[in-house]
Amino acid sequence: MNIRMLRAEEQPPMDLLLLADPSRKLVEQYLSRGQCFVGESENGVIGVYVLLPTRPETVELVNVAVDESCHGQGFGKQLVNHAIEQARMSGYKTIEIGTGNSGVTQLALYQKCGFRITGVDRDFFIRHYEEEIFENGIQVMDMVRLSQDL
Ligand SMILES: CC(C)(COP(=O)(O)OP(=O)(O)OC[C@H]1O[C@@H](n2cnc3c(N)ncnc32)[C@H](O)[C@@H]1OP(=O)(O)O)[C@@H](O)C(=O)NCCC(=O)NCCS
Image (cartoon, rainbow, N blue to C red):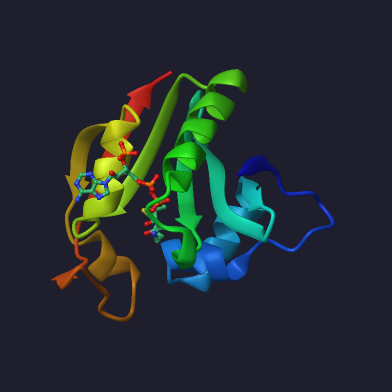
């Protein structure tokens, strides 16, 4: 998979972005404030992530997603490691990420890529999303926050 910045004239891969966050409104906000990267194979775009500057020297990795037909082949890890390197090269000192309490794969992946848990934002998904969300048979209620120094 080749990872590159989305060009200004290109449409972001909305279906992929919505896999990571069901709120189109939030995804559009992230896109307007952040930098979108896409991962391409010979079949086209199969991965995406957005880097969102949040505070001075801190950037958040949001909307990491891989096409469902390509899960479990290392593409997620490639995207997360690319994002970390991109943030480091851009001069950020800290990269953060958040995921739902039910995100077993995400929590494994992020920790394998060097992130450490910094806290839990309880009831985040209840406060910010109108509909109940379930993943792995668990209601998504709390946001687990992770970060790593660059
Ligand atoms: C999360 C997501 C991006 C992962 O993509 P992927 O391409 O399937 O991930 P990878 O193949 O790179 O695998 C991730 C790593 O987690 C590990 N992993 C996954 N589940 C695990 C588990 N239950 N226990 C231990 N390790 C696990 C894998 O073994 C792999 O590590 P390894 O390379 O050291 O073996 C993908 O599942 C996705 O797009 N999900 C929907 C969108 C989403 O939820 N995004 C995150 C928003 S916070």
